[in-house]
Amino acid sequence: MPISRPLVAVGSLGGTITMSPATGGVVSTLSAEELLRELTSGLAMDVRATTLSMISSASLDLAALVRCHRWAVEQAADGIVVVQGTDTLEETAYFFELTWPSEVPVVVTGAMRHPSLPSADGPANLLGALTVAAAATSRGRGAQVVLNDEIHQARWVHKAHTSRLDAFASAPAGPAGLIAEDAVHYFHLADPRQPTLDPTAFTGTVPLFEAGLDDSGTLLDTVVAAGAAGVVIAATGAGHVSERLADAIERALTSIPVVIASRTGAGTTFRHTYGSRGSESDLIAMGVTMAGWLSPRKARILLMLLLANGAEIEPEFRRRGEL
Image (tube, rainbow, N blue to C red; front, side, top):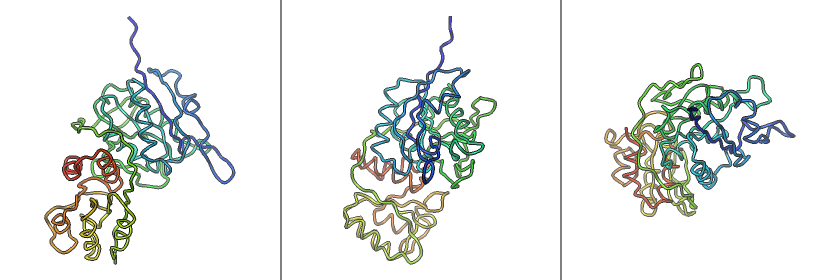
């Protein structure tokens, strides 16, 4: 009796991994089929390739991710690989973590070096992503990111360097696993899956901005007046803002939700340590939502999806932002 081979569907959105030199710099030219041409021979899996778009990841939006999600569901595959640029890769991975309803693995990958450069990393990253997506041990782990032979959970991963091959890190949790000798090695058990949100494109505006020294709150007043549906603030330290920005937040909360995350890149927002004006305790008393362990970028993805789904914001951030 023949042994069944897993089917992995690969959808390419574009990005550095697909780029070739052109006037003024590299641009996306390579299709998903071209990316896979040198990789599929000898693999213990079947691979189906689809080119979904050829755009920079900086130009991706929720509508594009919703279309990608719809494509992934339609594949009825044993594993899904999404290829894109690395600039917003962590946000795409978290979008899938929040919306993917299946035990089927979703793996997001890309490249730091375009194919024309020496030692381009795209082929190895794509091969690693295929390996992880096809592994039976990857089932039930939601969305993951694979680059540089490391496997990262979508919730923790972030781009930590502009150009190095080891640009992606997962502070403070560390990688979920590694690929060695074409095998997948996980270090931790899979986290329990949270209830998924509908993959609905949000049509409003959710600005993200960073709080800093001498912050007057004027920017927040401006975006609220311009019709923002919600705001995420990358606050200092464990979730602190200036007194004047705190005043602006209090004004904003009369009409829109405000989410506070930490700008530090690691650690959780606090809830009951500091008590001065603009501290986490003060902001919570006003009615802000704390992002917990979520980075500002992922907090924004969650807030957009919650608004699109008409879901309660505070309980969902508690559920997904705490350990």
